[in-house]
Image (cartoon, rainbow, N blue to C red):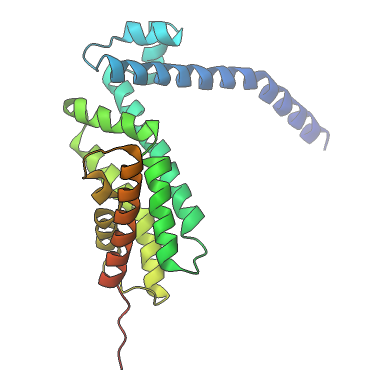
Length: 224
């Protein structure tokens, strides 16, 4: 018993001692990533140096290398963490709108509207889009496939659940997720920009009609 108390006390002391160090490590890492993201977006990957990242993050060049290895690895982490922020936003939209559903059409419309504002309309989405377009040569092809798959997986699972409840006919949930995206927010993105009020009205109309088209295509099969 005495040993357990001593051990517990020492562990608590160690935790208190290490806490500022861990917080400093987390803060430095976040500062480096923020500096790198800003430089990659404004200057481009090739024109951005590790020295510039270090100076903007207020750390040493050695610290950048210690944390991330090299500049390309730093770019990959910037893209991955930006993508993770987008995924968190998608998951939040699914949780808010597609968990407890009483009206499937209205739930899907609300989900699309939240995706358009909090995800596609976010700074993270704009940053990711620019990075993958301008720095494609520095990013592995597998990353695009992984991001595409991950963005659909949770929605596909939810559509499969709706199929199990008899609300939809979903023979291939992954394909259903692709069809849903194509008919709704991806369709909105395919149109050129207009005046804000006209754009909002058009987006709303496209989403509503897209959701209805999806529901007609995946309507449950009623057999006599």
